[in-house]
Image (tube, rainbow, N blue to C red):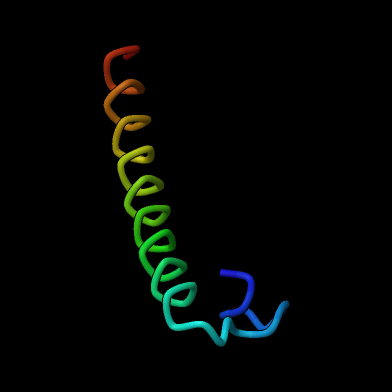
Length: 46
């Protein structure tokens, strides 16, 4: 999150803040799944 890195101010609206936290978690999960899929696809090519 840009605000967590200090690049922009933290959202003051609790709803926006909560939505940002949810999206951040989803992005992290997607990145984890993407890495796993890349590993699996790489093994198939061996």
